[in-house]
Length: 305
Image 1 (cartoon, rainbow, N blue to C red):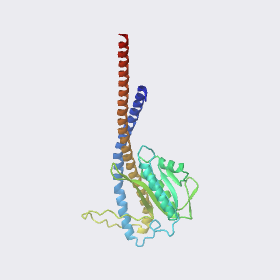
Image 2 (image 1 turned 45 degrees about the vertical axis):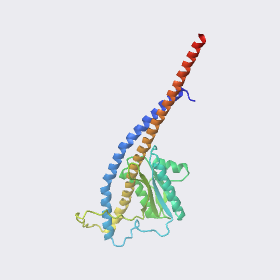
Image 3 (image 1 turned 180 degrees about the vertical axis):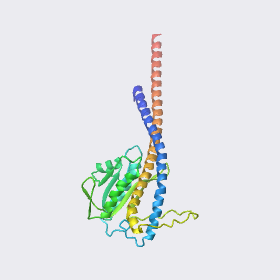
Image 4 (image 1 turned 30 degrees about the vertical axis):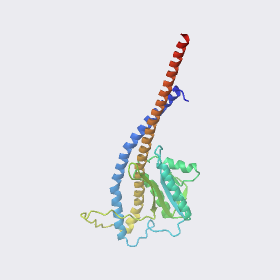
């Protein structure tokens, strides 16, 4: 049985841990609101980009842009996995990584070679520890991703896709990579404060999403394109890929904060319960010692009389 001194030391340790988890919970709570605001701020741009591309696709006639055309017998598939830079967020990373492993296994069953790209230190560490090579990695922005962060990854992935398997792409920092025939992305979609769902999406060849049903009172856009629709598709489709990756990073950021808040709240509640349990145990042990001391005093007094 532990001594009173050991129990009091454990109680102090648990209370110190509780202060840390409570602070992390409060920080995560404030970050959720900011992350949701960033998601909401990015939606108008994404919606307008989708509307313009849908109109372009209708004006371009036959769509034969490389980003829109299925490849015959695809051999290599890029997989972008979005994880966090920090831990203490419950099953956020493990769920995303499980979905990534399932996607990799499916691609291998289909006879395709997966090519891994990862954002976030947790994902980088996970694959590196298991000896899996990464074709590209980015970190340091999982909590506050910007469009430039998404564009950096999107530019590389689009260049590899446009080259296709069998062709090599020279990297700005040196070296080269063989092209790919598909681009897939694994991220975490924010549903509610308590629910975050891993999502697997194919980014390329892409299908331009239909714009949301508009208000009947909203006038038609009646676009007039200059230069032609084909030239604009060449310019806008890579930006559309970057927009989808940016939206996934923002969604994952909100999911990370929500998962961290849930995990830290559970840890704080557990620390509080453990502290109470240890305090009761220490009080019972102290009470037993006092009772024993009183018994010894009474026994000694009786022996003297």
